[in-house]
Each structure stands twice: as C-alpha cells, then as structure tokens.
Length: 94
Length: 413
Image (cartoon, rainbow over all chains, first blue to last red; front, side):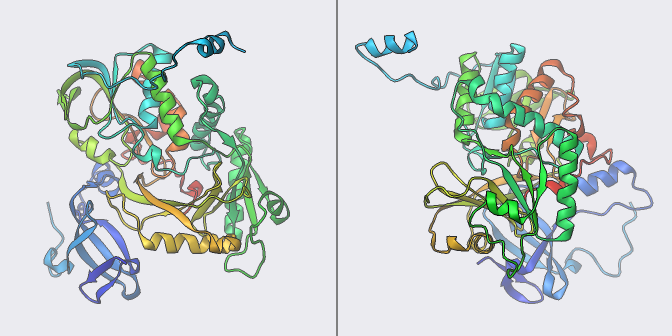
C-alpha cells in the first residue's frame, strides 16, 4: 500500500487523497489574455522526475503541497502551502 | 496449390526467412525521421511509403519495436464514440482494420466479436441512447439493448437486481473487435521495411535540433541525423519529446494497468465494459480473460503494478461474473497514458515547422493505429492537414475548441 505523509493527518493510504495538479502561478485575472489562460488551464510541464503538486486529503478537506518523483514513485516531502504562499499577502501584481 | 509453395517444398534446404531486416548503419541524413517504433509510427512509415512514395525514412525507437504502449494496451477496436469528430475518425479506422490483414498479408487475428457498454443508471441509459443515435446517424452500427438480449449475448453475466449496481441496459456495438497487437507492429514494420524504410531499434532520441523555428535534425544515442521532417509518435513520452523541441503539451501522463487470467474454456464472445464499475473484460483466443480498469489515481512515468489496482478492478469483475471468483490471475502490467483534458488525441502540426505530432492517445490509441498512420502520412507528404484530423489539432486548446469525448471513454478516468 502506498502511504502519503499528510502534514495534518500523518501517514495515510494514498487512496484517501486526490492529486490537484502542478503548483503553478495563477494568472492575474485583471491582465491575463486568452492565451495566458489557455496556457494556465491546459499546458502542463508533465516532468519525469521531481514535481511539485497540490494534494488534497478528501476525508478532512485538507489541501497541501507534495514534492514527489514521477519516475521512482517516491514522495520526497509534503508541506503546508504557507511555505510558498503567505496568507496575508496581496495577490501578485505582475 | 500455389506454385511458389510447391517450389519451396521441393527445395533441398529451407532456411527460415528473416522477417525484419537487420538494423542498418544510421545514415547522416534522411528525408523524414519518425520518433517512436510502435504501431502508430510504423503505420505512418508504411503509408508514407505506399501511399506517397516517400521511402527515405528512418523509424527510431529507444527500445525494441512495439515495446511501448502498442504491446501494453488491451487491443480493443471500436468506433462508438460520442462526438461527430470522434465517430468519423474511428469509423474510418474500423474500415481500415477490416481489410488490414489482407492488405499487409499478415494474420492480425482481427476478431469482430461485438462490444457492450453496460448501463447501471438512468443517466447512463440516456448517454448510451445519445451515443447510439450519433453513431447510427454517421453510419456506425450501435444500438441500445436491454437485459433479455444482454443475457443472450453474455452468458454468465449477473443480471439480477440484488447487486450494488444492477445492469439496466447496454450500448451494443456489433463491429467492436480485438486484434493481435504485436502482429500489427510486425506487419507494418516488415511491409514498410520491404519498401526501403529503415528501422532503428535501440536508438534513443536525446535532442531535437530547431533552427529559425524549423526542425533540422535529431540527436540520437547513435549520432546526429539531419532531416527535413520529423514525426513524434511516442505515446507515454510525448511531453518529454516535445520538451526537446521547446513546447509544452496539454498532456498529463498516468499509468493504466491491466491483467490477464489463466486460460479458461471459451465462454465470452463480446467485449464487456462497465463505465460505472470502471472495468472492461474480454476473452482472448488463448482463453485468457483480459481485464482492464481505470487509469491510476496520480501521474507517473513508471510501469509498476499495484495491489490497489488488482483489488479495485477485480472486485467489480466479480460483481459482473461471480463464477470467476476462483480463477487465478496470470500477469499484471502497466502502460503509460498521455491523458488530454478532452479525452481526444493531438494530431497535426506543432509550433515548430515540419515537426509533426501524434500524441495524447490516453487509453484510446491502439484502435486508431491504421487511420492515424494513414492520415498523418498524408499530412507529412502534402503539408496539408486532412479534414479528418482538423478537430484534433494541437492549437484547439488555445482556441478553446476542445472535442469533448469524455462521455465515450470506455471507463471513467
């Protein structure tokens, strides 16, 4: 059984989780054009190696971030989104 | 008796014919390079040679021919899709499949056995009716049938109402078929090679050379080749190869697992699919029960097998066919699926001039082998995208014109 170390719930079977896709910057809704949105919505890096993804623990509705290796099927590290996104920060204004 | 056979019989010595030519030296330049020696790449090479007379072609594969997803799929052919674009495309593929053993002079064990997609809910019956009507409108044989007829077609299927998901109806697609997937590879490879196409197995592409927005060559583990045109047909590795040319794809690569049982006496004629239970099942000519399910829950580039798949897929199979409970499984394996957001392939031109793509084949690639090869060859030879491929162009995502084939994915993914 594959185990996902959840930052909130500890080690749990991976069937309890849903993968939310690559962590990428959200386009600024005030400025982004259609091409930027299409890129954001559809195009993936889909890397072979270590990727950084959103993961969701379904029973507890808990989102977190995992670094994992898509070639060896190993989970390298899981952590809270606040390591990357400060909750009090304004949306990025590029 | 054919005269050739008589002469062969009277020969004093009968050395076996070599079916595929030995791998030649890699030349410095080719007109067209095809990356990926699976069914799609070899079919494209064959039709380039036969339909368009282009034979200065090298097919490169990092492993052996047909060692990727052509050898890992569950070999089902059907055309009962939901969208007009999808049905037209797969219907042409069915037409080609029917004559393919004769055209290639090789027994592909093409077996039209009928294909049933079970409906376990009212909403599923509505979708089946919709698919049946779209199919019939476009000349594809499909019909909604009910338990009395299902019982006649599939003996042993549990049609009682005291199960978790009772069978209410089914979409019946009589032309649904299976074929020997390795034979498809061998036949296309041999017939293409006989016309001068070079087959280079164990030749890994490590880079794609682009100058001024135009492809000029490929770097391989056996040296650099210059060429005018490149086709990438590398299901399961598409994002990695397009990354070499500097563009990203609307693809997420996920494993799909399947398994076969020990051989049983023949009992199951058609292919039986249940979208709600996430399983499909058919019996091979050897008697093995071939079982597949939904894609894995997260993306990977690894052909590993899991116990979760075996448990999650075989339990619903027992709900459909309880008598299989004591049957032993023989093997389990996985292939890599390039999943697209609209459950449709990506075929055609790319942002790099003269670099063509054949990708995004998710869980529906094998059945499209002949039509994709033929139409991609037409595109490469003429430079014009055939009408049949137009809906599946890479740029449809930037134009927000997806195909929307999710309703016809054989099982939920």
